[in-house]
Image 1 (cartoon, rainbow, N blue to C red):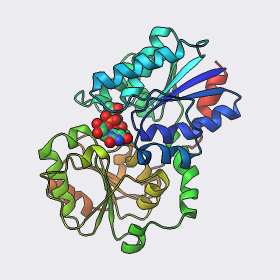
Image 2: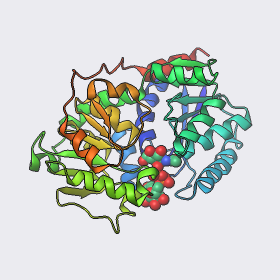
Image 3: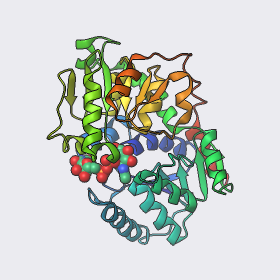
Image 4: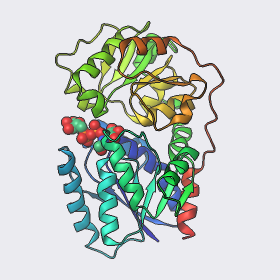
Amino acid sequence: MHIVTVVGARPQFVKAAPLRRALMDAGIRETLVHTGQHYDPEMSAVFFEELGLPDPDANLGTGSGTHAVQTGETMMRLEALLMQGPLPDGLMVYGDTNGTLAGALVAAKLGIPLIHVEAGLRSFNRRMPEEINRIVTDRLASVLCCPTETSVRNLAAEGIVEGVHLTGDVMLDATRFFAEAAGRRAPLASVTTHGPGAYYAATVHRAGNTDDPERLAGIFEGLGRLDAPVVVPLHPRTQARLSGIAVPENLEITDPLSYLRMLTLVRSARAVLTDSGGLQKESLWLGVPCITLREETEWVETLEGGWNRLAGADPARIAEAAGMRPETPAPEAGEPGAAARIAALLSNR
Ligand code: UD1
């Protein structure tokens, strides 16, 4: 069996790492295709290195652009690549990026069974480009690997029941596996300077926040009201939007962090403030409460017991949420082993 995996953005590299090992163990051959969406070394190469991923078999070199350009160019280049050889037995995509959508459309048109890892997530906000990408990808997928029971229900509500599997979350496999490696590393300067539990960690990169100056200003003002330093590894998208935004004194802005460094930063933080999907879960799995800088979340399970609180971009809500502690022990993480379950269901097809 031969699977082509399409990745292009940071969180996809993280999810692809446990799957790669599981596919290998199951005797499935994988060809790794990088769309080129994330191209800066600290957004891409460093992840491959730390995660033990081999160099991609192909890089489509798509880079940045409007949604149509990014999706269209990835489609054209991926289609050309796939048509060079015998078609694979499956094409695997992760999550909800433009590369996911491009991969889904190309696979569907070439008649290659589409495997969607992280299927069924919904924010019910169609103004998010990611929501459009998820809806279309799930419509076209033959194998839908759902991380949560909620995601299975979301698909059923849209009439999608065939090929749906509750596999669990591959990101949990990655966190469990790499948290150990992160622990063996020298501590980050930010952690040693401030001390464990004496700083917050924050990230902002969603278009809905970065491309709306009022929301971005609100978030920075909110972070400025927190009662401790805030370490903010900043995505290039956000860095480019900072002019005209007041950066409060307690903020420590850094370049984007590698995966292991990010795990190290999060693990010792008092709380995490983020608009990322993955970090909402990673922080909880590491026992750190989260404040989500959005109005909704796809990961509704994380809201249990006040471990994750929705604060939007409102400074008062952000400061209030950061001052609250969870009311219960952390919600159950679920069973690791999603990657092995996905590999097993593919080899049984
Ligand atoms: C993409 C995903 C988002 C995911 C995120 C993970 C889509 C629609 N969005 O958002 O769901 O959460 O990746 O990080 O696919 N840039 C660089 N260097 C890079 C990459 C990007 O400078 O290596 C800059 C470019 O100016 C670019 C901007 O960041 O225009 C945005 O990058 P893009 O790939 O379009 O989307 P992300 O914001 O990364």
